[in-house]
Length: 189
Image (cartoon, rainbow, N blue to C red; front, side, top):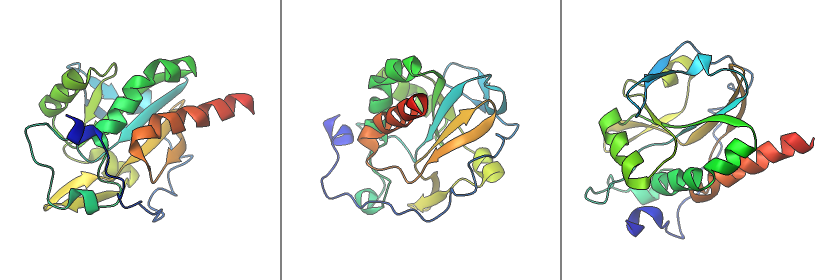
């Protein structure tokens, strides 16, 4: 599995194209998405406190090739290592006041359940095969091998409103730590 978690040193860095500038301060739309626990998550009704929703293109599998040219697409590579970073810092995020952590991609729930099991993730993954959240919020997407995918973006939701957005996200393998640092700065200020 190291070929999925080890990131090449020469990955292209994604640039901020302004595709997320409109998101801070927006209410989370009335949308429910299936999760890997067998239920649905109402993103607009997560309750009080902060929730983290990190969106990512797709998680590779040990037995499946990544899309053609994956390493040359800025921001595409690193979904497995990002999930592992959120796994490894899940308790820290909870201690910093985060109520919920969710990963979100366009892969179906069965695909994501395999990822949750293989990576031993302590949080559910959300499936948005129809890009409903993208349509409602204008979240950035791209195409690889002709397939639409989410760009890597993280939403900090507080009391039903998008409080902060991390975009672009790089490097993905330390992104949970970036979120944790941002949370700690809020507590100190």
